[in-house]
Image 1 (cartoon, rainbow, N blue to C red):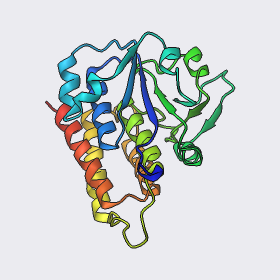
Image 2 (cartoon, one colour; image 1 turned 120 degrees about the vertical axis):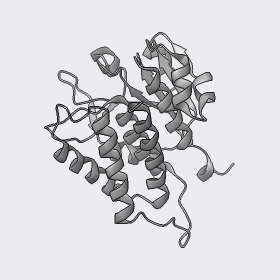
Image 3 (tube, rainbow, N blue to C red; image 1 turned 45 degrees about the vertical axis):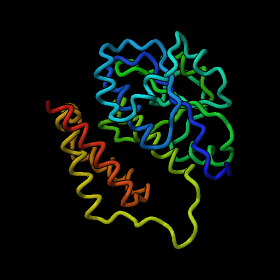
Image 4 (cartoon, rainbow, N blue to C red; image 1 turned 90 degrees about the vertical axis):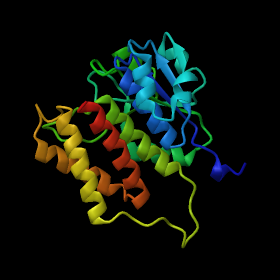
Length: 241
């Protein structure tokens, strides 16, 4: 298989995940993005059927997921690893944005790379963070610095996989998203985040402006917006039931 057509060598690791729906949503996103390797470190989630329901066509990723007791085990064969975390205190680690990490992946795409996400409530411990080579910090508003697990997974994996996607021949580039496409997407995001209670302690207007800026920098195609619309449609349905 030509190198350009190989799937990205990304290994997604969820540490002590508390909610089965987040495992299912991660599996669904991985399937959408062409990823397949998932490891779960001491998951505390209950409700296997909820994970399968949220996976929607990606249950095989959950069924084949590696379940281990420690992050060391999950990181076993990774040539490099990134912990997705807010900037921690007292840890001298290199900190990069998702875009900077993507450039590093593009420079050496053959390397097995682990992307590590902490639990919904506590994130990653200091000792777990120190096991990783670098930190990915997603820029957010100071008034609303925290993303929930599903949001962090979606933003990070989307940026990394798009950077690793095979280069397309000139003239065959997919059509870009229009301003109207993106406006519909952002309205759906806003409704979903509001329904999930994300804005209860955050300024909705400023937070959405930051999210819109992030996606605008990604130069979304029409296919990208369709994918994200479908994702947020499912999430909105799940949180309003």
